[in-house]
Length: 446
Image 1 (cartoon, rainbow, N blue to C red):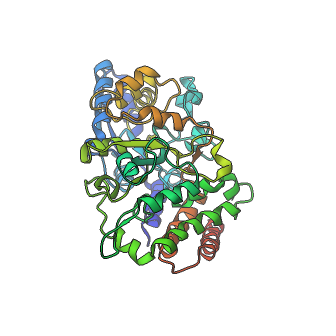
Image 2: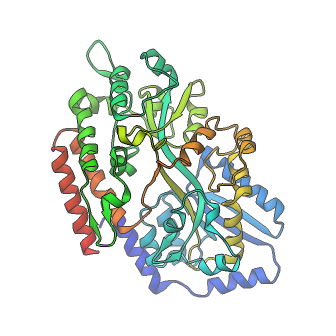
């Protein structure tokens, strides 16, 4: 049984065995006026969690009847499912762009929060993305609020650009210019082994959004998938993207590239290829500032639009955007207090405390009224945050589809063809056709 299937099976079991007494007990405790203690389980751990913890500390100071405890958790889905089945879930859970989200909702892991938002006259229009409501919804009901926003764009090492004779202030905006930069930034040693590239495409990172490289060539969510008829589509941009990926292997040699990539270190360490200087560029989000500060503090780095085909450049800077979300597990205690905290944290005040100051997270805020220049001035942990936010608000950015069954099937099958395409085991166009056929078969069964 696959990891994803196990998650779905356990989630479905919850609908039959979920204890029904926990919720009432939690609300009674709050009504009696006792100080409410709530656990928030999230994906931020280590130094990435410091800003989150500072915001929680501020909330606790200003809300004396509530005590929120943030706990960073790896393998979050599994632990939340287990806690719900045990009848002792945390009050709040926050996850990244979680592909299991709809299955967990269907299985009874998370509860709908529409009525609580309606009681508070809550308006989703405060947030940046017009698609936020859709991302938080399953079958027309709301199951979460944004925790933090992100935009995946091009991060580059200015020093390496200068050494290669490239402009450090005008990074490539088009695919053609990007290809030229790749050539100039690729270095080999005396034995002919690659020792540096511009950007190396690999399955380990950021493999989770490989299916959407086609956005760079003009594809959009609507041209890739017909939601009304539940059919995956095959726009020219999709084939162009995968032929472009395979062209990298053809130009630089699949064995040479794989040997080079084999020496990469893990994310979250100083040996990660962009941080160690093996790559001059990276697809990354605002969190990269924390990692550069910790592992490569002397790097002179820049933030730029991801490259696109010529016809898209005039629309504005391009990037992939998404959100990390708050949800409330079924059976959680103190739902009213949890909702109030989620609204506070995802609003201007919470985002300010999380993302600014000397130890703030330095991430993109969820709200349009984020504080403007004051926010920029206080975001000392991320000196480039203004650039990230500028691209986040660009009309050219496109969202990564959030957790739908179609997205799951699509991501799974396209992630599976990346290695064969980059090692020239299969023609790019043939690989696309196979990925679409397999994804469609999975969706049809569902």
